[in-house]
Length: 69
Image 1 (cartoon, rainbow, N blue to C red):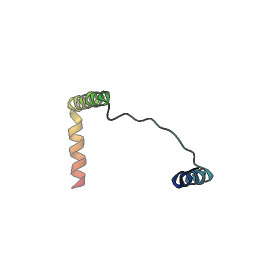
Image 2 (image 1 turned 90 degrees about the vertical axis):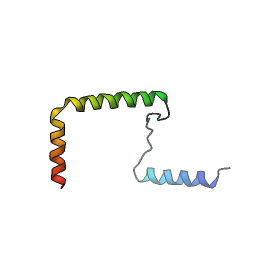
Image 3 (image 1 turned 60 degrees about the vertical axis):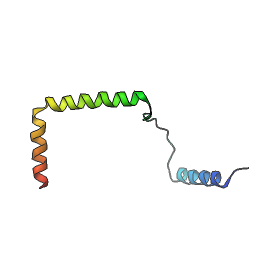
Image 4 (image 1 turned 120 degrees about the vertical axis):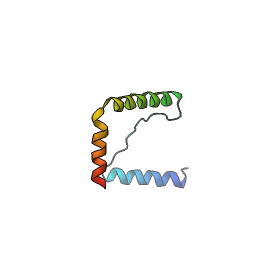
């Protein structure tokens, strides 16, 4: 015997399919993993280094900020 919530979910999914939608599965990074933290740190360091080497970046950002005033 199915519970009421299971029936509601099935009905909802059937309605979505009838409306032309289909379910998809996506994989996302595990934010609780030690590897995730290490990779975030690595990419952040690369981005920061790239910003330091881009001498035109600060001028560009300053010009954009001036337009907001």
